[in-house]
Amino acid sequence: MNYKLYFPTYFNNVNPINDNIDVCIELPNGKQHTFVVSTPQNLQQLIQIGGKPYLEPCAPFLFVDKLTEENIRLLLDELVENPILLRIYGDDL
Image (cartoon, rainbow, N blue to C red; front, side, top):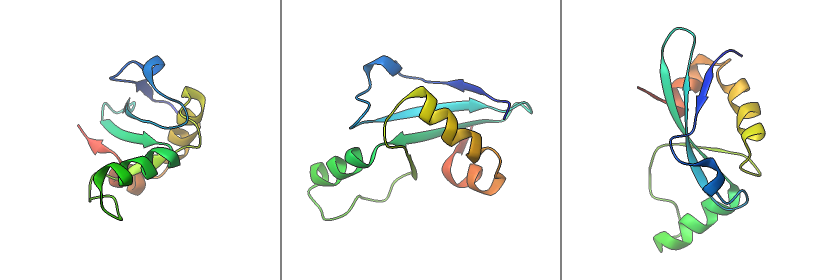
């Protein structure tokens, strides 16, 4: 899929196994979307940090097994093909 990918934070400062990162894309029509991509381990850590047996409601996360640019691109390639999911998971800027 044709889109521009941006990482607002420095990607090289991310723990690939236990972290999350904001990801922004711009579609050919000019629409921009922001996503939170996380690892399963990070989700567990966020639950523990919150001190509750659940993660408090927040923006929906997307998950990859390891935070790499390649994995994120593979995920986004599928996501941008589905306009409904694109709206659910990504904030339209």
